[in-house]
Amino acid sequence: MKPVDHPGPGGEEWRFGKVALKLGLVSPEELQEAVDAQEELRAAGIDTLIGDAMLDLRLITAEQCEQALAEQDRLFRLAGLVGRARGAPTVGWLVAGMIPALCHMPPSGVLAWSGAILLGFALSHGGALRWVGLGWLTSVVAPVLHPAAIAGSGSLLRGWRTHAGAALLGAALGLVPLPGVMHQAGPLFLLAAGALALSGRGR
Amino acid sequence: MRPFDAVFLALVASRCLDRPKRWWLVALAPLLAYGIGWYEPLGRFAMPLAALAAVALAPRWAPVGLLLVLPVYGTLIHSLGAAATWLGLDVVFDALLARLDESAITPRLRGWPIRLAIAGILYYTLLPLAYL
Image (tube, each protein chain N blue to C red):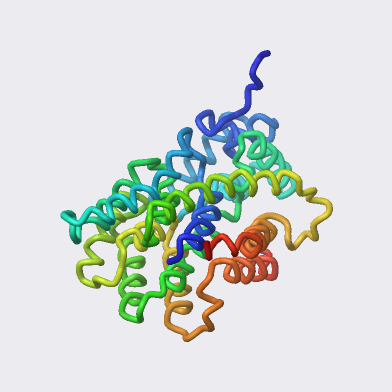
C-alpha cells in the first residue's frame, strides 16, 4: 500500500506563507516582499507574523487571511500538529507564568525567577542551551530554584511582551497567597481557558 | 512541582511548538531526571546536567523536556509512570481534539480555550493517578 504523503513538520508545507502561495493569494514576489518586511521588523526588535506583514502591506485582505489560516489548521491536523495554532505565543507565556506557583517557590525564588525571565530576554533570545546556562547561574544565586524552571519557561517565550507577561503572571501567582487548589495545573488551565475565551485571543 | 502537574504542563507546552521527528525521546526525560538526580557524586551539578540532558533529547522540544525534569521523582516507578502518562496523554489529547467539530463549539471557545479546557478536564479525570 502506498504511504499517504502527509506534509510533515520537516517539509513545513503548513507555513502561512507557503499556504498563501499554494492558495494563490500571493505571488512568489509578494511572498518575498512580505518576508523582507518581516525580517526588517525583526531586525528592529519587533516580532511579527508573516500573515500580519502581508496584511500591513495590503497583499491580502482579512478574509483571505482567514482563508489561509483555515487551510493552515487543516494541514496542522494532517501533520499531527493538531494543537499548534495561532494563539501559541499567548499560551506559551501563560504556561511559563504558571511555573512558580506549581513549583511552590518561596518569595525569594519567585523574584529570582521573574528577574531571570526578564534578564533572559536580553541574554538568551530563544536558545534553550543559553537558558539552561542562565538557569544554572540563577540557581547558584538562589539555590531554591531548579535551572529547568527558568530554562523551561524562558525557552517557551518569544518577544519582550511574552517575557514581561510571564514575569508578571509568575510573580502574581507565586507571591499572592492563593488557596492550595491554585497550585495545581488543572484549575490554572481552566482559568486560562476562561481568560482566553473572554479576551478573544484564543485563536 | 508534582510529576502529575509537570506532565500536563509539558502536554500543553508541546502544543505551542513544532513537533520534532523524534518527539517520543522526550519521554525519557523523567527517567534521566531520576537517574541523574539520584547519582550522589554529581552533587549540585545534578540539576543543570538533567536540564542539559533534557535539551539534548529533543532540542526543538526543549521546553517540554525541561518541564518533565522539573519534579523530584522519588522512585524509578514514579519516573516511569510520568513517562507513560505523558505518552498516553499525548495520544489521547490529539484523539479528543480530532473528534471535536468546530461548528459545535461556541466561537469564543474555539482554538486554545477549548484545548485548555480539555486539558483541565483530563487533569481532573486522571487526578487519582497522582496519588498512586
